[in-house]
Image (cartoon, rainbow, N blue to C red):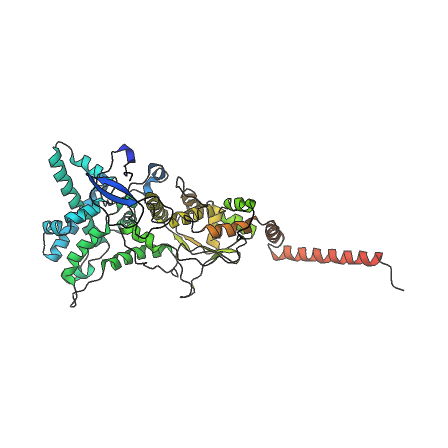
Length: 492
C-alpha cells in the first residue's frame, strides 16, 4: 500500500504511532515512528466508519481567507501551540486542570497516567498528520535524540490533558460537579466567549474525542447520582454543538444524531448537518428515459446553479422551506426542487458562519469518505448569492437572515466561499444536490417559460401596467372582430 506523506510546507513525512480504530475496506498506510496506521483511501462517497484526520488546511485554500482557519484566542492540539498572541488563554489551561484536580481530589500526575495511557496516546497521535513534526522542532533545541523523545512525549501528553480540561470547562460539561463543590464557574467576556466558540470549530484546532471523553468520565465519577450514572459525554458534546448550529438554522430544522462514532467537535458538527434522505424530486422536467440520445446526456452535464436574481427573472421559484411540525423533518442542508421552485431552509449569517462552513469543507477535502455534502451546499450558496442583488432578493423572501453590515458584505463572503475548493458538480456521488440542480436549470433554460416570465415582469409588474395591457388586448380583439365583420358578406 502507498505511504501517506506530509506535503505541507515541505516538512518530512509525518511520524505518529498507532491507529484511530477506523474500519472499512479501502485504506492507505500512514507510517508513524516506524509503526503503521490506516487512513481512508480516496472515495467520493461517505464511509460511516472513516476516521476524519486532523490535518493542516491546504495553502491555496487558506490563502483565500487565512483568518477563517486560524484561532483567535485559544489553540487546541499541536498546530498552533506556542503562538505569542494566544498565550493569555494558554495560561488558563493549567487553571482548568487545577480546577479539575480540586474537584476530584487527585493530582495532575494521576490524570496523566490514568487518562493519557499508552494506547490512548497512540490513538490520539494517529489523527495528526502534520503536527508531530512541529512539536519535534520545538523540543529539539540543544538536546540529544533520547531527551527529545522524552520531552516530546511529555509535551504531547500534557498538551492533550490540558486541552481536554479546557474544553470540558468551556463546554460546561462539569457544571453539575462544580456546582456541588463550589457553586461557581469561571466566565470570560462576551467577545472572548464568541471567539472561543469560533476557535473550537477550526479543523486545525481539534483534539480527539477519546481523550476528552476519558477525562470527562474520570471527573464525572465524582458527581455520579445514586445509581452510579452520569450524563453520557456524547450527549454533552452533541448538545454543545447543537446550540451552535441552531444559531445558523431556523428553529424548525431538526438536528439528529445518527449513531455513528464521533471523532472531534468539528466532526460532530459535520454529522449533525448531514442532509436527510431526499424524496424523488417533484416536477422535474430533467428526468429522461434510458434510451435518450447522446445529445441529451451531454446537455445534462452542462447543468449548473445560477444566481437568485436570474432564477427569479426566468420563473424558477425560490421559497423558504417551512417546517410543518413533525411530518417533514428537515435540516439546514435540505435544499429541494419541488413544484417549479427551489425550497431552501432559512440560513442565518453571522460573522463566523463562513468560517464554520470553510472548516467543514476543509475537513471534507482532507479526508476522503466523510462525505461532500457541506461542499455541495456551499457551492450552491456561492453561486446563488454572489451579488448584493441576490442577497437582497433572498432576504426579501425570508430565505436569508444576515446580521452583517450590508448586503455587499454578505455577497463578498459567499462569492469566494468555494474558491480553490476541488468539487465535481456532475458527480452524483459527490453532489447530493445534482438532481435539484438539473431540474432547476432545465426550467431556467425553457424559452417558453422565460418569455412568459419576462412578459409578467415587464408588463404585469404593477396594477396600472396590467390594466393597460389588458385594455390593449381587448381593444385589439374588438378591432379584429370589427374588421372581420365588415369584410364578410351579410346574410340575406
